[in-house]
Structure formats: structure tokens, C-alpha cells
Amino acid sequence: MEGPAYSQIQKGTFLVATPDIDIGFFFRGVLLVCEHTANGSFGLLINKPLELDLPEEIVHINQESNQRIGIRAGGPVQTNQMMLLHTSNQIESQTLKICDDVYLGGDLQFLQEAIAKPEGPYIHLCFGYAGWGTGQLEREFLDGQWFLYPASEKFIFHVPPEKLWQTLLREMGGKYATLSMIPEDLSLN
Image (cartoon, rainbow, N blue to C red; front, side):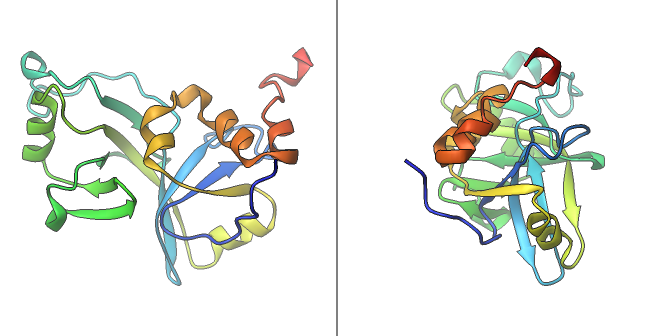
């Protein structure tokens, strides 16, 4: 069953890399559009985990109880900048709602409190972001570099990052589901 065509780029949309992006940072990438205006767009890559140790002043390891924390390479721009993508609606004045139950923002106190709660919110610590100037993202979409799909908390926080690209293509159905079976290394085909 093929899902409905989704062709509008807006906040809360997934950008799913097409097989035409066959190398580089966005290879099999899934980005969450966090802002899309006439002046440009920005988003976070959510399916590229990072293995790194955070400074103790950010994360008090001995107080870490929340196992719902993930670290992601958010994009190639300002990779030393950390953004919080999470499921907490408790700090509305500090956050931007991206889609249902998904928020961007928060401060160090929020992060430390969330880490200390065993049943705290799901959080992705995203280092860096992806950005596009006026009309650039639309051109990339029209050139066939991205498929679009409505974002949801389920896919952002509950699907393993290494399976997200294939999972979204299968959800899209039809020809997209077929693309999900392409091996990463075409020499194995």
C-alpha cells in the first residue's frame, strides 16, 4: 500500500535522503526540519549516532539515571554546538514545538534534571545542524535529493537510528519500500 504523496516542506517534516545521495554526511540520512521559512531552513540529522564522552560539567555521570538519552551528529554546521531534541513539554518558554510531542531547546539545568530522572524525557543531544539558504532546500527536493515524510515522536525516539532510513521508506510503501532494500555497498548486490 503506497502512502499519500507528501510534497510540502515544513517544520516537522522528515527529509529522507534518496539513493542519489550515495556518499558523504547525508548518505542514508534522515533529517528533521526544525524551521522552514522564506529566508531559509534548518534541520537536525537524527539517525547518525555519535560516540563521545561529555564533560562532567554538562553530564554528572554519577547522577545519570535516564537511559533515554542519545547523542547524534546533528549536521555538518557548527558541530561544536549542542541542541536538545526531546519529548518534554515542561519548559514551553524555552522550546520550539517541532511536531506532536517533540521539542527543540532547553538549558543546562533542564538537561541535568532530565538525566537524573529514571523516567525522564527522551532526549537526543544533537551536535551541529544542517542549514539551507533561501530556496536551496526546495531546489534540492525538486532535484530529487530528498523524499518527504511527516515526522513523529515514534520514529525520532523509538526506532533504532541505524534502521530509521529503511523503516521510513518501508512506511512510505510502493516504490519507496523497494528502495529500502538496496544494500549500502552496491558491490554486494
